Every structure is written in structure tokens, then in C-alpha cells.
Image (tube, rainbow, N blue to C red; front, side, top):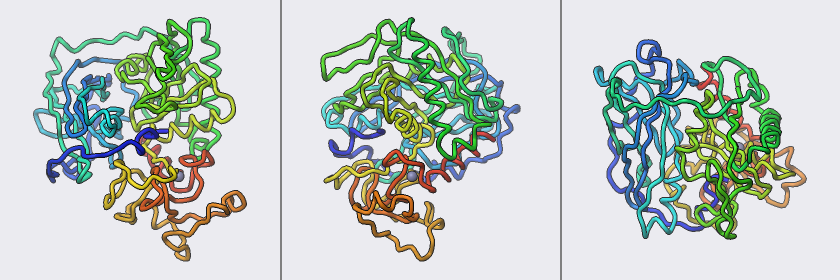
Length: 441
Ligand SMILES: [Zn+2]
């Protein structure tokens, strides 16, 4: 349900400056030897991400030293062009980029709301990276919404001897749910509870098992069990349940999850990402998913930020978990259409989306064009009424509609986990497999 609140509401005019070619990722070498540059611990850079519909800026908060680095020791420069933001860690002495990762934020979704045209606000955020041995600089880049190119908006030099770097000590236990391999060669997922009181631990752990079972019931996650780890952090909330501000219901929970994010009832998210990172750091992790103690339908997922789903909902809970995880793990786009929706700030005309499973044909060669049979017409004709009869036989093509829009944007198949909660389409499966192959190096 990433972005579900957005498309109907918006107008967009984010940033207006020109793109700079010096910020291209092509200037980054991919060869970084981990032991040469990093201590093996994790550092976290906390900041506030603020602005309004036309501006964004970053203000420094704190640097924290967390536990052992759970990411790859070889996959240090994320080569994918996914995300609305990325950050780089630059070795001050040599000027070499020694780490780069991509992500999206709740702030950038908020920027497209009507509220952002009237008022400025900020959200707490933070990024993690392996701790450098020598003095370094962090650079944060955001995508210019007109040009879709990345521009550096924040730079901060940090001394590794700075006594203000705070140590972190885990305040909560972590519990193994599924262990596939060593942390440096595996995707490490942490499941966090919100709205479960001290007497509801068993209920949370049962939800974690269900989450794990749901994930491994879909390809290609089923074939990658041996390099996926899932751990839970147990942290009780003072009160049971989840806030529903639109119904006058506020619940005191450890993460503060809430429905009615950006005015959309089912958009259930956490606004304070630093609280999320504080809990996640109690386990070795790279990817975060929050399970909330409610049976109300809703959730969300933001690339390399976090995913969130209701733990108490019966029925299609497992599918919703996996759909949201598709967003939060690697930024898969929503392949569904919102009827009557013709304009979206997220997918402007004339720009190729960065999501691997959507195209505007501006650069279809960079997407799944080569996977399509040469006898399949592009765009691929499709009659919605055929869906139920032909769902098993629908060929890979480029079907109009996706990213909430009816026209001008194309998806690989009529049905997919990112659309109707079915199996992932071949394009999404390939993209997930490539992403896992990279982060599990
Ligand atoms: Zn798909």
C-alpha cells in the first residue's frame, strides 16, 4: 500500500534546480575492500528531513555506534538506480566513495500532500552504514522531481574520534524466527512489534511465524531460504492496539504506529523512523518490517525504510505482508490502477519510473523489453473481463495501467503480487532475485 494515499491528492512541484552530471553514480568505483576501510561495527547517522512542497533540507541530529555490521562486506556500493534518495560515505583523505545505499522516505510522500503546500514540517530519519576506520563525510542526495536526476542536498564531515558519537546498548531481546546463513552473506530481516503489551508476547511471536511462512510461500523467496535470516525483537507497548486518529482513538505504543496517515484511513505507518531504528538495532538487521497489534486492514512499505502490516487480520494477511515487503525490500512499484486517476506526481509524463516493474516506454530497453516474446504486441491488448478465465495463460507483455494511473504507464502482466496479491510476475521475480544476489554477496 505504499503511496496509496498520494495519487488522488496531489500536485507536485518539488525541486527546481538543474541536474549536475558530477553527481552521477558512474564516478563511483565499485571496488572497495571492506577490511581496508571499515571496523566491522555499524554507525547510524540521525537527522531531521524537513521542508515543504517546493523545498527539502536536512538537519543533523546525532551519530550512534550500534552492533556488528549485518550487511554484506562486498556489496558496498548499491548499483541499482532505485529510490528517491541515496547517501554516500566518502573517505575524507582520499575522496573515495566507500559506501552507497539507496532509499525512500515518508517525508517525500508527505511532500506531495496538499498540507505540504501550506506548511513546513520535518520527520526524524536515520541511515546506517559500516563504521569507517578513518574520518569520513556523509553526503545525502535526493531525486530532482523535474529531471529525476540525483542532487546532493546535504554534506557533513565527521571525525571518527568525536566523543559525541554515542554507544548503543540493546534494551530488548531478539529471537530467531528463521536462520538461513551467516549475517554477512544473508538478507537479515528484523520484525518489530507495535501495540502488543507484556502479556501479548506469544501473539506477536505467532505473527512472526506467520510472516515468515508467508514470505517463503512465494517465489523467489522460497528458493532463497538458505540466505535469508528473520529475527524478532520483543518490546512490549504500554497499551494494546493501534491509534486511529480519524476515529478519535489514540493508543500509547512503543513505535506510535497510526492509521489515517496523510488522511487515508488504511495507510498505517510510523512517523518517527528513529524510534523504529532504536528497536531494530536490538538485532543484526538490514531490512525492517513492523507487525502491529490490530485486526484492522492497512499497512505500507517504503523502499529501504520499513514495511508495516496488521498482525491480527485474518484472511489475506500473508499476502499483504509480502506485498508490502516487495515495496520495502527493493522498491517494487504498485502495479494497480486507481479508476479515474489520470495524473500522478509520482509518475510524471515523459519520465521513466525507477521502479523495475513499471515503464512509460521512455526507456523500456532498461526494463523487461528483452524478456517479452517477439510475437507479443507492445503495448499488449487486454480486456479486463478476460481476467478470471485467463489468469494462468496471460503472457508477459506491457499492459497499460499501473502506478495508480490508468493511462501512459505499463505493467508486465495483468496480475502480480504488486497488483492483486497473486504470485509475483516474472519481472518482479527477476528483479527480486537480482537484488538478493547483490545484497547476499
Ligand atoms: Zn510484478
